[in-house]
Image (cartoon, rainbow, N blue to C red; front, side, top):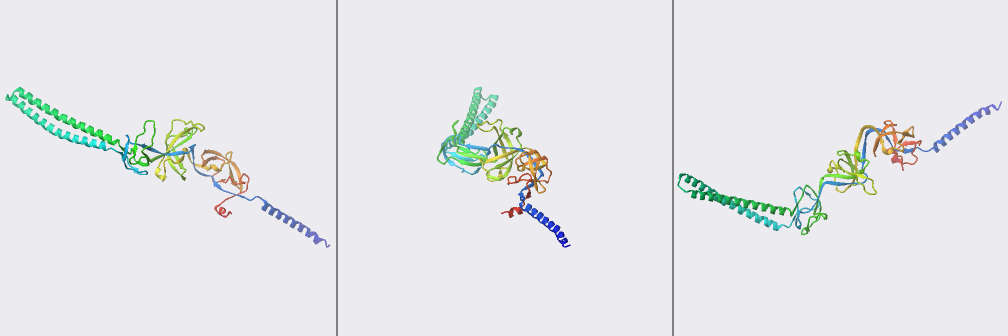
Length: 393
């Protein structure tokens, strides 16, 4: 009869031992299981996706108008009226060569013109007087007071004086033409700005001799003038992408010197031929003009630049970052705390976003930190927040 309490205690100890073992097993599994990986995510959302082509090599910022100027004739620089970095207006004199001989010739011709104009007044006044005398002689002849010989003499004298008047006018005309010739010679000694712009470089100095470039022999220009009110980027694109590009298409320009920004532009020209350079892919040169060059403060001609030409755009489509795609057009979707591989079908795509036509729903969380160790399909994950970043050592 005394063994009954012991028999009751046995099942209780068994249950207790089993419970302890279960708790120990659970604790062991909890402490030994892999920790959840912190990942960054983004939600599949609706937005705009564009199809674009980009340059294969760095492009260059150029001015729509750039003139490397030299005087039409050679000579010694006597006046240098601008300096580098100065803005000038169209027609402004930039430099002047020594031209005192031409100036003196023009003054002499001007004096000759003044003398000829005075001669015109005298000769034409005399001609008018003789013509009046001839008219009176004709009236007297009609009345029989003078002979025919006297009338003929009066008419001849009037014609001669009128001829002298016309000769004086011709002399004045020649003097005006000589003045024009002298002025043309003076203009050849003055270098004027063909358009408004900024002086990029001045090569000549006061007292130096400058000459225009002989045919086929380039020489440094006296003044390099740039119209920076109109700028564009010249860049090569692959020949495969060329059929997508048309004049007037929208483009985006990025500059190495101004990082983090892009500038709107439009295609202004497409080269009518393909460049075939040895050891390089065949390319077509395109020009994308800045919509507003002033928006890029400090933009300089010669900067390296990249262009992206948009030829198709779709709005309000489901999209994800292109960087979130794995090989074979799959993504990692977070489901019940685990990373799940999901195959997706894509539409338009670029370096930034890809359109998803099937395989995802709006609002699903897509893993973007694919470069972290252990991030793969089936891994236990937790979404990284700003607080967790700050708490990390």
